[in-house]
Length: 247
Image 1 (tube, rainbow, N blue to C red):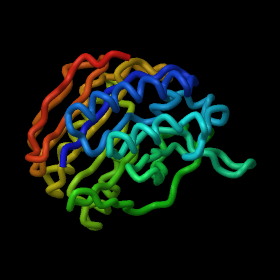
Image 2: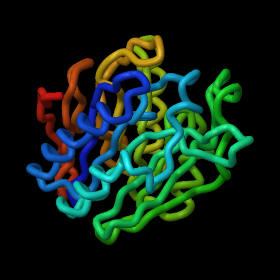
Image 3: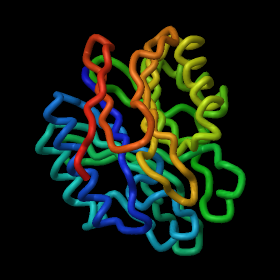
Image 4: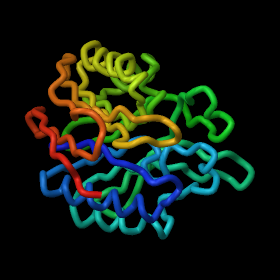
C-alpha cells in the first residue's frame, strides 16, 4: 500500500481553517495514490494546550464532515490530530481521529503525556492499538508516545509492521527524537513514518523534517526542514517528497 505523511501547518484554535488545510493535503495525497494519510499531533487545532477544552472534538462533529466526505471520496484513511472530548467534567484526550473510506471512524488516545500536558489533557489506555490495512498492521503513536521504547515494543509484539507517529518536534529535540524512531525501525523491523508540523505551534519552532525509515532503520526520505510538504511512501517502501503544498 501507499501511505503518506502531511507536514502541515496549523492555525491556533481555528478548526474550520485547519480543516481546509487538511483537505488540500488529502487532495495531494490522493493524486499520489495514498491509501493512508497521517497528520501531525493536534493538527486540527495546533499544539495549543490552553485551548484544548475550547477546541475539543468528537468524530461526528459537524465541522469535521468535510474530512469524512473527503476520506470516502478518495478511498483513503485520514488520521487527523485532535483534542478528543470526554465527559463534561473531565479533561480531553490528545488524540488522533481516523476517518475511514466507509464513512466510519476510529480514535487513538495519546498514552504518554509530555510533562505539563497533564494540566490540560488526560492519558489514554495503555497498550498497542493496531489496525489492518492492505495485508499489514499499523500502530499509532502521538509525539511523547514515541519517546518511550515500551510503546514501540508493544506495537511490534502486537504484529505491527508500520509505526505511525504524528508529532510536534522542535529543532532542539529533533536529533534525539529522530534517533529513537530510527532505532524502533531497526530493533523491531517496522517501517516508521513520522509527520511533524510545518510551522511554529504552541510556542515551539517545529523542525519539520517529516521522515520515513524502512524496516531495518534506513532513512529513506526526509523533508528538508520546515514548510508545507507531503512525504509519500509507495507500495515498495520507496519514498519521495512532494513540496510545496499550497495551504
